[in-house]
View (tube, chains in turn purple, blue):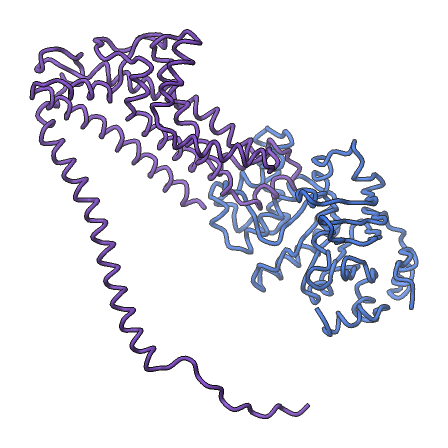
Length: 302
Length: 276
């Protein structure tokens, strides 16, 4: 077969001169956007720095061992954060198992067992929406359902249940993402060995998705621990001198104590509030660092 | 043109005569009868009839999209993981129809193991990867598990390479090693048949050779069905070959016959590279 005749070169649409000009323009835009993004980052960091600086300046002098061990008092020198600290810690200890079992269970059902249908899409959309509902609405729900209907009263368990409900959507969505990220090949390998579906889910999928699941739970609990509105609605005590004794006792929490102190006129209480904020931030930073550490440690394996 | 649905007994006789060996009526391991499969409306497997014998390596060749992966996945019912799949027909495994309600899928998959195209070890230690199968089936005794792990790794010709790092994560192994690990994992549940879906297509030539040698060794104790894109591999490794085209079995015969003297023109065209 003879080779076709060489075709004449067609008109070029890309003009080398115009390209050169546009390249130098594009490089300028490159550098400008880099500076804009950097400014954005610095803006955020600077604001954060100012906040931190202000809080530490006001509160550092009030931090002491007595501060951690004492109950609040009308006398600023003797006031402490102990009941609030214990309240927050107990709330965390109650919330974590609840959201782990219910949240991860729901995520496993939605990802592994439910057939994808309009019903499941509808459910998933609603769960995502719930993650954005203002926390005070959950407070109202908790007040009506747990405090009044179930008769728990304004107790630790009512507060924990309310905050757990509030955290569930976030846990379910992030657990779903983690489970979805486990490659299908892994499930196929397990099934091809004769394992049943639940064995595959619990022995292969869940362990593989655990880092993502744990990170989601820690982030959800970090948010819950800083919430004031739902706890006030549920009736957390504003003036209480003892740490909670059981799940049916009255309680208070760090954000509420801080709120209480900031609403007092004396300057000393402002300092105490700042100290309380420092404690709260230390707890939050620790938990978030833990989440990042867990994520890094487990994702290396993959 | 000769009828493509060959009577297998005459194939064995002819082949045996050619090789000057006594005729051995081999036991069937899989008897596929009029198998049809649809992915939704797409008729992917059309009236497949195959009689696969014990302790042989059967290769399945054909161009992309001809249905060979689909076919091998019906043999352990893994194809049913796709929701839109519909099947029709009978597959007899040692005489029992695998589609009947009483035959549990988990039971079938304990006797029929599978090795996939991409090595897929679990993100666990090497030991836990091999022990996964036996543990899932109830083996708890550590001594027994130790023995099963060693035996499977030896059988897969990878024991010497990993015996000092059984507790390390399986992801630290190379691609070829991971695939041999997956073969060992499959052997640990003591299957009868091993299905291999293009097991070496993701591997380098040296690992490919190691896996092919392994297949030859394993033949004496297991029946192996291997899907391969690589015709030379089929010619090297298998005893019988089935040529699939557009969801149908065009020809199924002794490997040297398929490659040396094919009956169907389509087979000849594919073998000589005129298409595919």
